[in-house]
Image 1 (tube, rainbow, N blue to C red):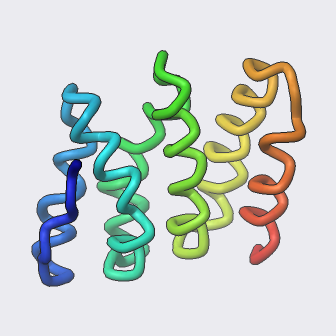
Image 2 (image 1 turned 30 degrees about the vertical axis):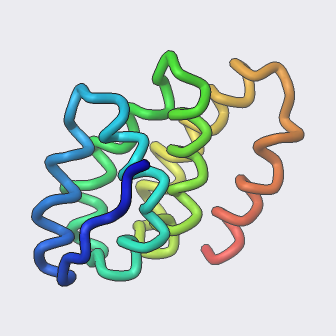
Image 3 (image 1 turned 120 degrees about the horizontal axis):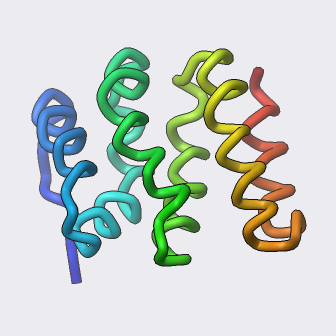
Length: 118
């Protein structure tokens, strides 16, 4: 239904970050479904300062699919994030998701992949 716009890397950064703050869940869903295409074009400072602060709200979203997409998006973004952010914020959110889901099985693989490069 939603197709990513063919944007150059600077345009991608300018349009992606503010769009994650949108209250429109379908727009957030579309961006999260496409983050693997945008991630390589985002710099570490942009991810840390503009993307992640907006993205992290998805970990607590009422919609399970948005929570899942937020988790999956971290696989593309985490390699460019600082160890401090991964340890102090991302892992905290993952822990809460694990408690919320009642099972660590779904998160176990993702958690180990996030920590694998650091």
